[in-house]
Length: 421
Ligand SMILES: *Cc1c(COP(=O)(O)O)cnc(C)c1O
Image (cartoon, rainbow, N blue to C red; front, top):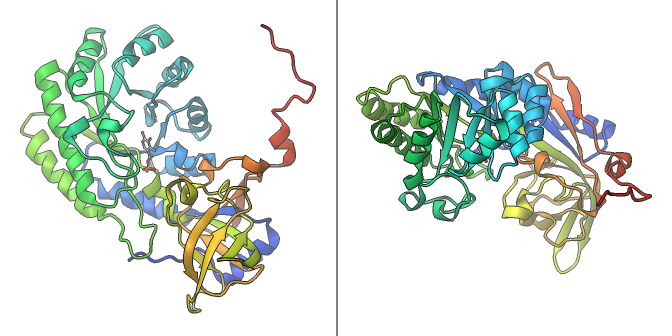
């Protein structure tokens, strides 16, 4: 079971909703910080432990620099994410550049920033050299185990996944880079997304530990760090349980002692790139009911849409909904909770049991602190929502203003700008 509480009292939330245009995102600083510290403490046995927070989960510099102060790095896969990291005070090897299908100018910027470059493909060795005119002193490769592992629902079967170097190619990758003069090496994988079963993560560690031994034997390369990727899930549904991270840490430590220590590969640094499990449960999308209508089904239309939070429409994902003031009423009404896009899949919930809902009720969507605002878009010319941070001292600050019509049209050229051809 996971509890779905609000970070503020009903009265405080009403006050906020009276003062601020809805919908908006609200992040809970204290909870994020406590969670980040807890995550770090869980792996305090692991040499050089670091979580490179996946920027895509919540690309707001206020959040990124909060995590930076806790010793987190950032995991980037685009040029703007590299620039956002820089703007958040995250520099050098605290940045992991785990891109795929990478434009050459992004390799160049990652190299310029001194980021760790994590290559997705054996052919990217050549692309990287072309982009930066040399090889970096430290390189990492993303490994895809293919048929040796089964995948999970969101990321899919590794054989069908577009990411990473195959089992056959991986030794050559390190051999080639060693010959080119690279001195330091990392090994990365990511074979799960939103996974709640901890044994999956432990098995991934086993796979990487064993691969480190194989790389040492077959390529004569000693791996300096393994990067376990992200993919640790969160209990979106109240009846789900969070992953037992203590057991994961313990399981990984046992395997480290069984595989890495006897092979003479200790110390081997261990890092993650988790986004969701770090901030996911501590972000909320706050919205107001515009209409309640009764057609062939009962609909609650809110002022947020899938342009604000796409996960339900994209993956059929569950996001828990709290109706403010009605937490203790009986959940005896069945509704589809919708947004206003001209798209019938613009629904936050289908056939959800909720208390009786009225116009102007405040609905809070839970677990929107990762892959929430960042997945938003402008379809139907919907403008992007503001983001607020509930600070540890109880104050609320704006950390991103809402998009305006002027922002939205700022890239347009109404006269048509001539293009040289
Ligand atoms: C998306 C992604 C992550 C973060 O995933 P979470 O589910 O947020 O933990 C980390 N690394 C890579 C390469 C990713 O694509």
